[in-house]
Length: 214
Image 1 (cartoon, rainbow, N blue to C red):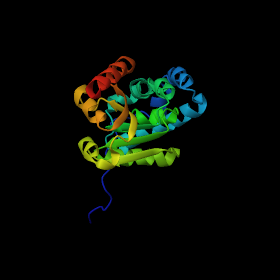
Image 2: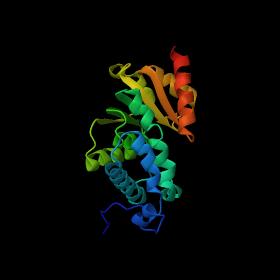
Image 3: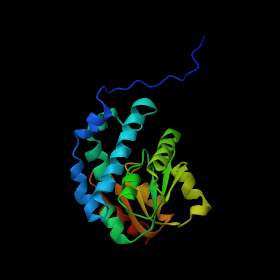
């Protein structure tokens, strides 16, 4: 008789999730959280829970990130995502859209840090939107809307025209097309294309967005 249970993806790592996460430098996130005015202990607890669910899902349900990123999750994903938290808080912009959210970077860490009051996350791949929705439910995060759609379709949709104060985008597309899309949806002309060097590239992104729509 055929087994009715769907096959599970075999984990590519034998190390327990807790051991992988314990070995990482969680204290490196504290200055970024402190600068954003976030509750450090509460935020790190939520980020730790987020990271745990991310690695578990990545190993057993569907591919969310490279397995090589597991031991550098804090530095490669969480810290980079939190780099602009202080700037977003100080900008006093409320409504943010994240282009190509993937597994929730950078929007979920930024929301946990209290940066931005409302977030719209756009992701074209259904397994990743399912994961993000699970995270929102599990962590009881509010003020976050997830759209399963291609970026081009969201840009074309009239109901979101110029509906956002700022945008983030992390290694989704080259800078130029990202800015052109953002120009049609972002009122403030402020955005943060995050890719490798968040602070420097974020500043470049703000400058280029002003030039492209000014």
